[in-house]
Image (spheres, one colour):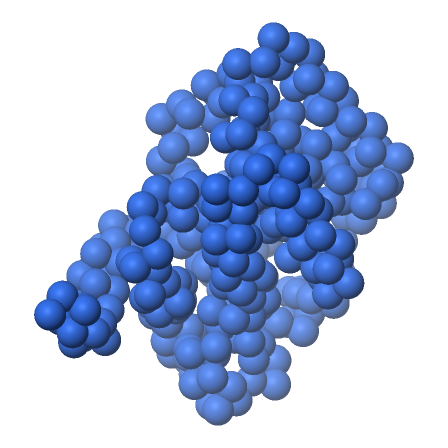
Length: 327
């Protein structure tokens, strides 16, 4: 809905609904988690199939979503632009699922992992920063392996400067790597002033956001503030948050087509009954359906693909190579 005036006049509402701000947080956490994953690899040898595994882990869950979207599109389930006009939606929503082609659909199945969705699954525009950012972090990890803290700092700083000329989204991934390396190098949670630093970074995040500094500064400060706070980490480790985290990728993939089909249909169908309350009803029902679908997808599709199909494909590609190395 067109509620820009309400959100722009309320800092709290703007903070929790700011998609661009959330993107930077997501990319920071991605860089952190990629660094954590690579840090557990004891030798370079298992990294030979890294590119293929990384692609498959992103592409295989995306493909079923786009296949279903094709069926929904053919049956006219995306034909609710009259509702978007009524809601005075933004241009992104108004242009969603228009001028789509079969060739674009086929391309989206294979190229969405690198951000080329051809209009079929718009949220995957961010995937290219996750996919290619993985290799940036890999190169950095290999470069700073067993180097001094000064050299590590110089290498990471230089990479940030270079990547800033390309995209700040790549910078966010590297900053996530920097936070991980800083924690590992300086045992950050053992610092005496850890709690004070945490409050300082959280305040920086709040003030830089309120005074409209670049979102990457606020996002980095927020992540640092939480990283330095045992209380925040304990809260975010509650079972409820861990379960949501486990289905976060399906949530990310399913929410957009669900809103553009089911939610718009539900709003149109229920408006005569609930009138102005329809928005709240649709939001609650959509949230519940989204959580259910994401859980089912994560449990019965994503986990099966990652635990069965990915190892099978990688085994086929690298079995001969491993045999020759062993011999």
